[in-house]
Image 1 (cartoon, rainbow, N blue to C red):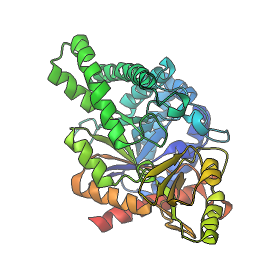
Image 2 (cartoon, one colour):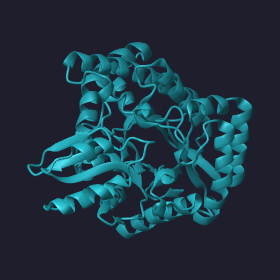
Image 3 (cartoon, rainbow, N blue to C red):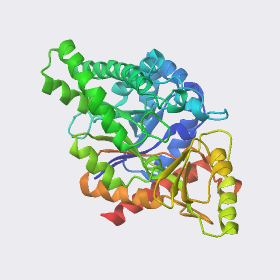
Image 4 (cartoon, rainbow, N blue to C red):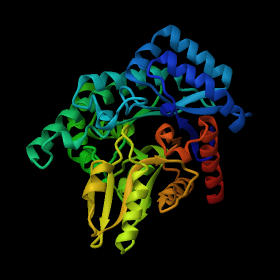
Length: 411
């Protein structure tokens, strides 16, 4: 949906189906109803998620043309894609394998290029006949616990190798823009325990690796000046602001945006998502009750990293909820857990959501218009505790309506 603040839709990673046939069937089942309920008189935006297998199938001309016709018939459009999960994302144990294959591999490069080729075909033109921008969000390069991360040489190797592969995609985006007049950007999504997990780490990677390597290579490859090459890199590589991820790391939205602005870096899209949080009381019984409340969200499919804040203000990171439950200490005053909970629920009893961070981000978007792409991304409906499981279409509708109401109240 096109709003004054940008394009708003939801990410279809909520739907199962790793083949294009199965995923398209899920879209055909859900989207017409959502369109009628949420945007009956205007085009309805979609954030498309494709597995590697589905992307290969959709790129076949007959499938891509059929999908274009269906989108036109439904008065819907694709403006962003989620290229983070490469393989199975539902009904399998995902955990750290969500990063596989990572940006050290050619498989990740080819998958991402394919998504951009598809997106370049699907992106519509606006009412003035101009092609709208589009983005593909992707992983934060890799998963840091796979490497000897404390060793500078290991970090340098990973950053150099992954950056080289990112630059291969940037070169593809420059070519695609010449061929199709579509400006598209790769949006790196920091998350806990990713090789890039904070705003500071994104900026450091961008300035220490991406720009120096990219300016040299793109200047030679395309005959650009250094200034032109830097401008292309900043156009085509941006940050995916996943609200849940930054909230888990206790990063204030205004601080993140101010840091990016200071370096001339951009946000490609906002993924609107909420995490779990709770403050611990001083007494042992109260602390035990909070941990038991977190236990109901301890499920085996996805990683649920926990970042604890201590009495001195330091942050302690746990790679998954089970480690936090067994190793957490009495010195910790608050936990935040990477579990995408419904946007419209703030109170889970002893636990709360980071809904206030969403409100802050949406308010800042109203004030600054720092991106034109907003995507609701709650994918955990199937693994929520039983009391929170609701009908999928009804849940998506409630989430988008909550976002629209929140944004209207902030205007």
